[in-house]
Length: 103
Image (cartoon, rainbow, N blue to C red; front, side, top):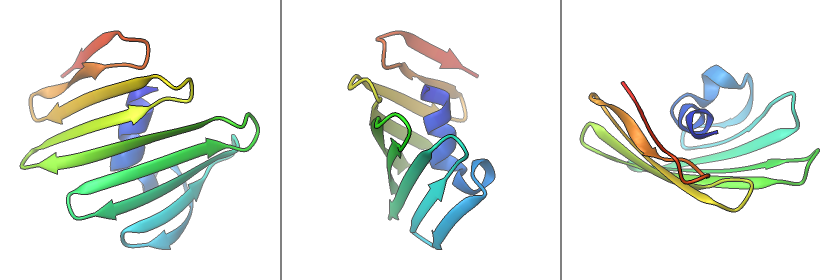
């Protein structure tokens, strides 16, 4: 889940062809019943997602500072997660409390 959210924030149009809106405000849909509302304000991106099939929802907030993006989120199970991405890699804690790192 952590990687999906990061990818969603950074590449909404690549993952989901069904987007409406433009510029800083978009709503995207996928074939699994997910809806993603993406709002970009300055160097911050806010994503709120829900699934019409399961009733679950989730959210994330990303802030870009220089070449680093800090993301925090709440998974569909209600647990929080975080990640930090830079040219050196991505690290953080997933919604189950596990640390991760990828380069």
